[in-house]
Amino acid sequence: LIQIAAGVYSGDVVVWHQNNLTIRGVGGRPQIKANGANAEGKGTWIIKGANTTIENIEFSGATVPDQNGAAIRQEGAGLIIRRCFFHDNENGVLTGGNPASNVLIEYSEFYHNGFGDGYTHNMYIGEVNSFTLRFCYSHGAKIGHNVKSRARLNYILYNRIMDEQDGTSSYDIDLPNGGTAFVIGNSIQQG
Image (tube, rainbow, N blue to C red; front, top):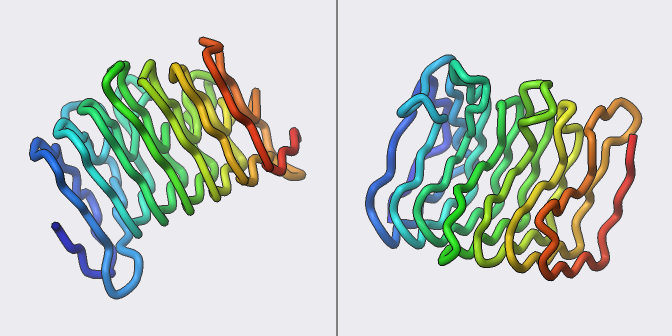
């Protein structure tokens, strides 16, 4: 268990190699502001370990030279994100294609992520085993998608996924690989 005290952390980028980590903001929500820094040319936090849980943290400003920087880039297997806020990154969350991985994102907000080229998104889930998005608010993606997933099995449950009046996303939900998808109880609005 790693606990991060509330505060502003500028340029604080890291590669997490450890397995079975829980990283939690305490005493409020810590703000991780990339401010031009990146790890491995990929983003703010690179998750290489398995079974990682990230709770109650705000991420902003992820940029990299190839314009595909992610606030959280998952390369290991198994990721849980809970009560986090991702805004103004090139990608909010970007996962690799690991067929043994299951990704759960809940009670989190994604806003205004994307480089503006249509290839970067609020969240982009690669070819993983399963993806569950529940009780989240994803809105205002810049040209890209509010939710994009290539998972074999998708559960998109009880979220607000919308552009609102000034949104410019390409799709609210994009599931380009098909697979099995349950899209239930969501409020969806295209701008």
